[in-house]
Image (tube, rainbow, N blue to C red; front, side, top):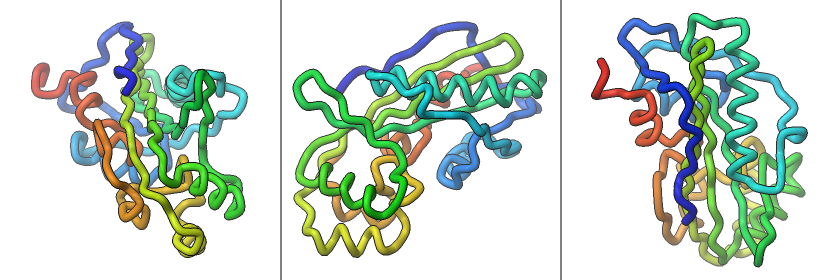
Length: 207
């Protein structure tokens, strides 16, 4: 597994009473963040993620997360904005294949066939922003899928769950049965690396 990457700019510390915005409409991220931050707003960031996706998936995840934070933070400079982006990828030789959210059921099935019986990596890039303060980092988790039968793939896609998930699966949902093992943060695969987020917000140290 590749080590978590960080861009260490100004430390963005969360203090009691701070206004916090989650720049995402993801119900998974909302649920996860609520474990750390009891009160926050949700303002989804509408950006062109394809235009920010490059050859390196880790750099892409950080770049997209930063763009989301800047989009929301520009109009909310008093708030601490938390933005994230998750990408699933495989590597063959020196070539990465990045799997975002499938466009439709056909693409979802194709993604799951690609992941069947192989290891892949999930990266979530996170950007914390308050005014001119900025801190961005990424966490990676390796996930091993067992070999999947075509009938399993079809049944899972028919539930509709894969259609708004990076890599076309939810490890906390119906795809839990597909996973043989994983190495790293489980919450990272769901969409927000909680351990790394807690550290980068200075929680437990600067309250």
